[in-house]
Length: 297
Image (cartoon, rainbow, N blue to C red; front, side, top):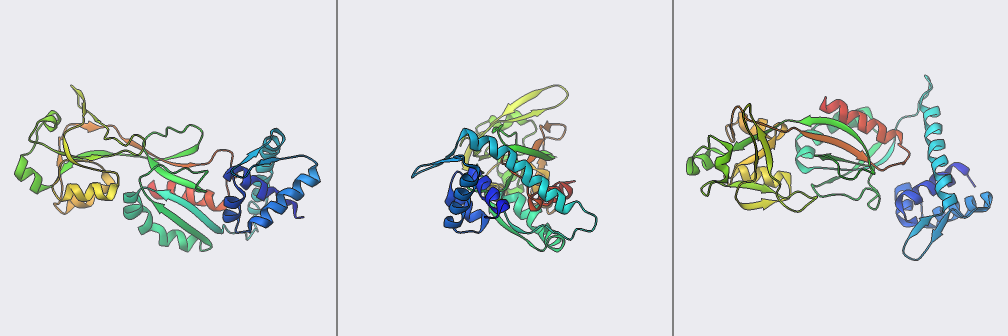
């Protein structure tokens, strides 16, 4: 038995809650992972996992051992990569999930530079605005905008996204240009509503100037749950949009969107990279997180 492989297999089973999912992420067969964990239990003479037909649960002894194992795995990797002459380069499969506009406009255009720097890392990228279960879906990290509600996750703040209010020239020609945010609540104006994954409902936006603070929701005839579709709806004249500047800069420069409400400000939106708690942070994940932070800086 290779003790390193056995500890790595055990840790991944704990994190995934499944021998099958752990085997997929380790690129091993389920049989091999099962045998490694069984050999580890035999060597320690301790039951680490309780297995049922549906789920794997860690025992009290297993939970204590897991905390020691992930620290040991991290220390071993640090020892290998910290030497001045070490030639270890990050490699392997990295599963990430990012919002669709962020992938299209920022991340994917910059990936050639990442690949040139780290040619042995394979990225499997989920592109969505849904809430991803990091543990059950075996995702290494997610990039998400807004405050994180799941306090169990580890997270690193990447940026504060500046927001603005915009509309297409066609929309303004039909409905008029609103001069005050409160006008968006009037019957002749429309917004494009964004359905937030946390609630499945549109959320009001907070605006303020030197004199007032407002919560504006607006009326809509179209609601979507995807950032690219949201932008497309605004460009098509379906209503007023609330956008991060990275999504609005190009359409504004081309005359496809018009900024509204000069003198009013929206709360900035934090952007985070989140990853599972207590999981050993592999070198490939560490360099990816550092690269995204560098990219956004």
